Image (cartoon, rainbow, N blue to C red; front, side, top):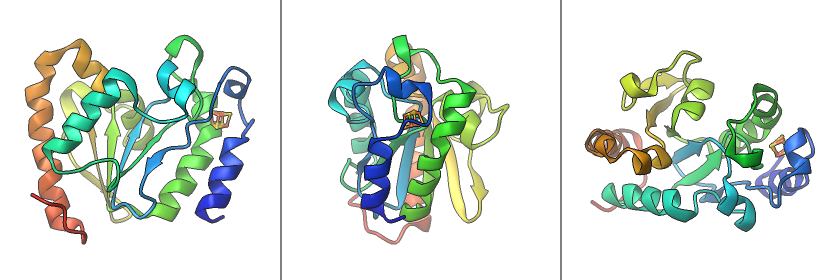
Length: 189
Ligand code: SF4
């Protein structure tokens, strides 16, 4: 499947029960040629309304985090583990994550990122390791099939607990170093 075909198919997906309560499918945003993918948990209320990932306060903070390392939404790709909002912002169920993984897998296959950054625990336990501890292992790197993978605290968690921001700043600078090491594109800074 090519990108537009994938997007169209995903926008009408009914593979799990979240299709019954969503307003919009949040496919993702950014460049399909990106070398860096950020992967979050799932859409919240604002994202569901707008059909865009990471809008609202957490999205604004994510933009600020990206700006620290000279990235923005035009030179990365942002996706979520599940593309439809879980009711009342509950964690996505395993059955929902499993059903939705087909879309993320295809997005990743087509984008072929060099770096994947998991945003928060839900993405990290699904992508890196089932027993991943975000409070202890954020900022650490693992390599799989030639792709470098790390995890940051979710921006919503940083809004709830600003004491975690200095650690996240260090993690962002480590991402910037990794970009310089493995990416072909020139990012300013
Ligand atoms: S969450 Fe994913 S699998 Fe479930 S309906 Fe939405 S797009 Fe389909």
